[in-house]
Image (cartoon, rainbow, N blue to C red; front, side):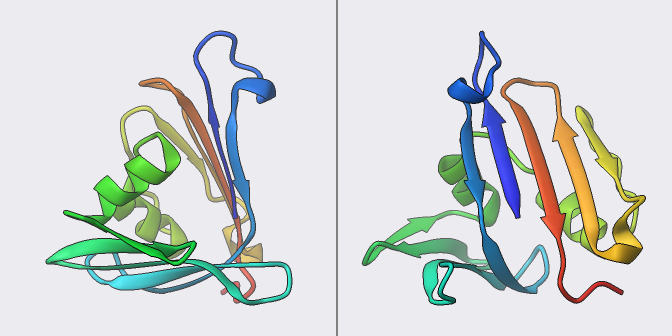
Length: 132
């Protein structure tokens, strides 16, 4: 997974927040968990969510959120379309205002999405090990 949030002017990599790393995902938009892994395979951060809320476990701390969308917005600095993201993972087109998604590489396990409006510009790239 690669996620970049580009700052407002100038929109350069220097002004970006970026994350890149391996992950394990289970569940769906309503309930699941997501683990971000270190290069050695241990868990760097763990996100769990269900209809009652979401929590982020990282650096020995647990932070609570009302839902997954709030958690992601706080952690990333931009909103990600959670329901659409799970559709994209299944190779299904799901239109979201301001987002462009490229599913042409889905059969090979590659998904790319970019949000241009509203700012900040956000780019998401996924490479899935268990491609269909």
